[in-house]
Length: 147
Image (cartoon, rainbow, N blue to C red; front, side, top):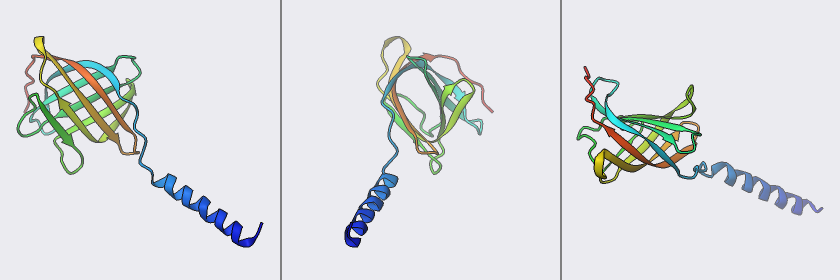
């Protein structure tokens, strides 16, 4: 192999490696979740909304605690991250194997009948994994006492 051809092959290899390293983290496909939504308390004792969901295949669960200043009434969306601390979340692959969310987004669609809430969520972990899903949740009319 000529020196110029070897250099070209090496440059192409390095370019491909750099491009692969800069690619965004792959998103997991959307999964259907079922769970509950209820009144809760934020870490600073303000009122919040808790969403606890389990995948319909039982492989994972997700938890959100959201406390936007204007409340969280459908239809609406709440987004949180380290700069917008109005929520927190976790993604679990087993009851004792959970990873905290670095950021997240929960969208509530218009409520259905009989206290059923539908929506979708996306959550990102610090390591770069992104998970998302659609959900149906029962609204539990229990008022948490915070503070």
